[in-house]
Length: 189
Image (cartoon, rainbow, N blue to C red; front, side, top):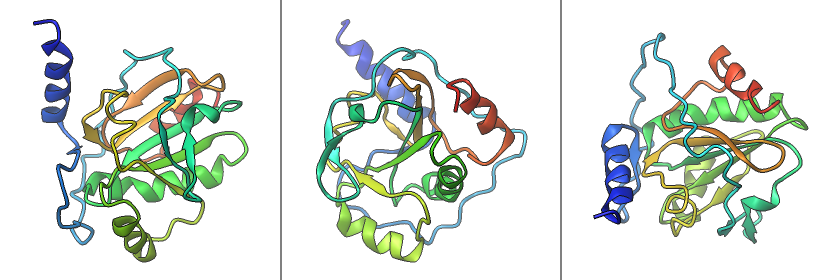
């Protein structure tokens, strides 16, 4: 019975909101207009994993080489898990790009794409929606989502300069706004 508890938590998280991990190739929803969110909506932070280290799973860096997020220590790291088919993910990408430009040198902003089709889905998407600062990492095998125990996208996790988790947000957020600035201050970012 205890083994079912983590699975139950993942299922409840998935039901709670956000986009869910793609089960197989699906049509890309890049032309779907994001639904406006009420201005008063606040993104709840989850600190239940605070203190856990950056994942050691191997994924692909922006150059196509194998890499580990755990190698990104020395300054705070904001890791965002996203997919091209996830409307809230697409909505927040420009604000993450602006944050990365504004905080360059102080905060590492890493966006990790979770599309199962990898570059075949992501490259055409980024041609239509280029990012000025961010470079996309790839995780086509759930190497991060499973150990991070997250089932919905977008999920954004802040790690401090020592590579320890501070908090996570499992929904989209305007990363250029006042709420994001207050959240990022918690890690000295």
